[in-house]
Every structure is written in structure tokens, then in C-alpha cells.
Amino acid sequence: MIRSELIQKVADDNPHLSYRDVEKIVNTIFQEITEAMANGNRVELRGFGAFSVKKRDARTGRNPRTGESVHVEEKHVPFFKTGKLLRDRLNGK
Image 1: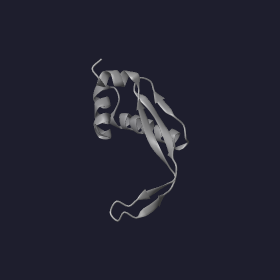
Image 2: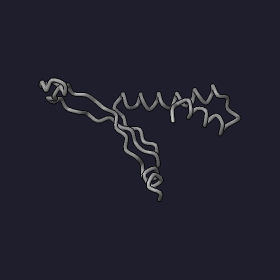
Image 3: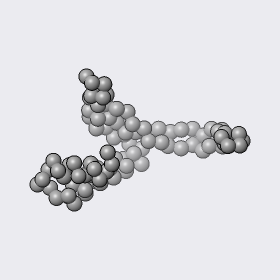
Image 4: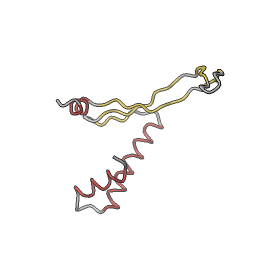
């Protein structure tokens, strides 16, 4: 599902809200999750999962094309851990 499909589904399920209002709500939710993670915070949506940021240390990598050693800088990457309810639903429980 892509963002526009999500917006359409929420708008269809809530006919009292205009499409533009639903679009603003969905965009605000994603912006807040992004901002929280950018500030190093964890975002937990009970039953769904938790978004967090993990730090990857600097390392020496390899260029797969040439085999040459390459320095890879330290970086922060997004991480998602599923919640128990989502995991159970995916496994048919």
C-alpha cells in the first residue's frame, strides 16, 4: 500500500472528513514520526510496532566491483520492530 492508497482508504472509511483533511492528518502523522526519529527518539504504536534509530559504526567495506577497500563512515539508520499483535496477525494467531 502506498501513501495515496492509505489516504483514500481512510477517507472512504470516514465520509464526514474531506479528502484534503485526511491527507493533512496522514501527512502530519508521518512528519511527526520522522521528526521524532530525527531527534533520536523512539516512536511506539501499540500493537503495530516501534520505530527507532540505530547507530552503525564506521567500518572498512569493499567495493564489490573492484574489490578495493573503502572507508564507510558512521551512520544512523531507521529500524522497525513489529508489535506482538501485528506479529500474531501475520502468523495467523
